[in-house]
Length: 205
Image 1 (cartoon, one colour):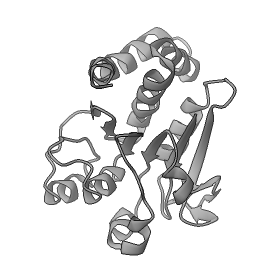
Image 2 (cartoon, helix red, strand yellow; image 1 turned 180 degrees about the vertical axis):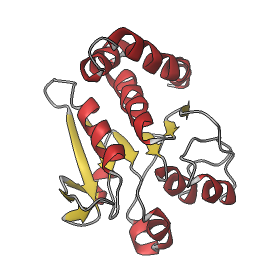
Image 3 (cartoon, helix red, strand yellow; image 1 turned 135 degrees about the vertical axis):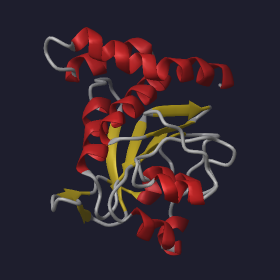
Image 4 (cartoon, one colour; image 1 turned 135 degrees about the horizontal axis):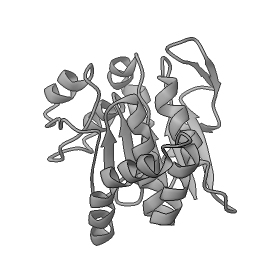
């Protein structure tokens, strides 16, 4: 099982790396989580150099993909050659987008008729792309999910785990990363945000 996190130049570390950490709480043979980049390395919005673990082409063959966000997402969607490398297909993949990653899914035509979540900065750009933006941290329809706000990346990760490995595995991953003394509250809030869409996704599948 391969989950790829698309991470571009100017990326937001929280969006990519929180999801990476939560997803890697699943410990089983064959479970692999990769940072997928358009080049061998990218530099984050705060100057952190991140080495690619997979290519965009490998992400196109992954079982699940999260599109991370960053300061240069509008440049990403304007780069036709780069966008042509993103071969994403919700009929065979779980797709998630974090904050401005929602704009990438919109420009790829993967959110047609589907409302979405994003961050406050990206909101007008997603609306200009014809997508209804919701005032909530997480939303999914079928195999496509979006999240708004850096710390909502935990919901994307938990949704993917729940869809691929089950609800108990998602609860366990969130419990591990939750603050001490707040674990039950933290897990309860996280699962409350994703469970309506887990049931819907199971019905679609």
